[in-house]
Image (cartoon, rainbow, N blue to C red; front, side):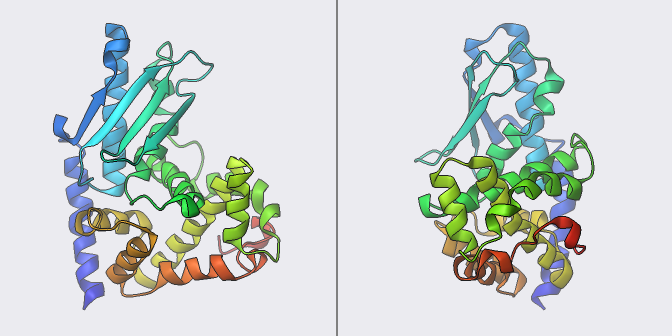
Length: 274
């Protein structure tokens, strides 16, 4: 019965998200810091952020809270040299931008999608920072693919990003322990993309066993549960409850207890089920 309900709910969510993405209003996000930029730059930056919020909502659902975004000028050789989220009383996204770049350079940059994706789930704490970054890394490409700004095929992009880091996980240590060590050692690409594989596996299992994608499930989660969950245990319990299966809690258990080499392929060429 629950599966029938969730599939119907998913269809309604997809239709609603498509409509909502065309009707975004100012109270869905607040943009701070525009006074630091020239008039023409303000127009480009506001359009970029609006497009980014629309794209993320169309992929991950309607955020229950108003998105607070802050812009800061930063001279660089790229449109968005760096960014971060803050998880205090008012969750927010902080973006450092070089306003000399044209709109398309901003739209094609992954950073905004990555940072907004973070806020689709609760703060997981320092112990699970690796998993939070894996989630945002996985979702940035889902969002970019949704709006046709991703270069190449989605699966190929994941393989390209994850493949160079598989060597770290060909180990008897647990995947979670390896990811934490990579984070501690500031080996961020390996930590982020190695951890994104957690969501590759979760998404694959969801679609195979339950006929629902991870992005659709997150959209449903945002409406039912996002404001009440405060940690990883509550998040994964909610996601599992929505699909009547312990997909997320059991996968996390594997990451915490099993040898990483039993979870990760040595190469994607040997993993035809990818």
